Length: 249
Length: 56
Image (cartoon, rainbow over all chains, first blue to last red; front, side, top):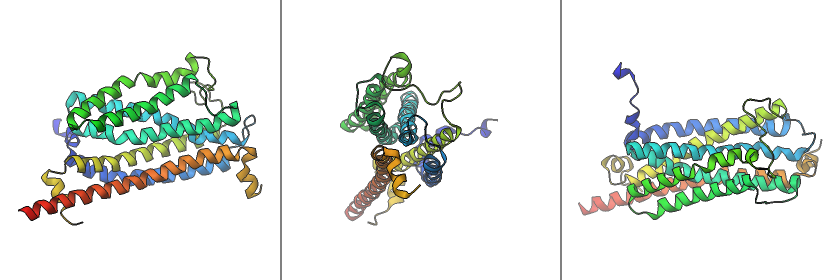
């Protein structure tokens, strides 16, 4: 029985995780391209015009997936942070580090597309509304994590400090998610509802789902490529990295 | 529907293309940056290896 279980700890070593990440990256780049291509086609040519918000509503096909990813990536970073603090595994901290820039990028996209939604729909680019403000705090958490991690020369101490910052910031995620219910704000309520009938046309939901899955695959691919660079840089003095890279320019 | 009508997005052209354009820009630039930083890391390590080999 024992030897039939996958030994997950095997992949907690950078030397074994490096080739695995290298195999996963092209698969997820391809999936992301296909899903986003179909998603874009559906966003513009299949999903019907919204009866209230005209063609402008098509912004939600990037805004909603980017916003969900901005929160989801943070939760995944929190997951890796817990693993890293508990088991002291190096790859966990490297994964947290690899996800942060992509998470920050999706948070920025969420705020940007939100502003481009707000101007025509609500008449303003920006408002200090509960959801928008908490999403901005999420961007600062990502940037704060990256700055803190980069500022500490001792890598292992930086990993731990970063993990603690990420875990403290997790409190912000339910605040973003439930902000539209807890406070009476300008930002409209959820378009996708988990246990109720959704408030939109079926093809709109499908387009959004495809875009969301595409963004998710993109995130996995980007994180895999970035974690490989991080592994090379942090393990550059080990024998396996030196043999892998050699001395050719 | 003509192409220019489609680009106009019922008057929402600036907002729709401003959103999709920035998203596309980010998701194209990030992979390019990832590629160049990966190459830079490999070059750095190869140089370190060369220095070490010359010393030996």
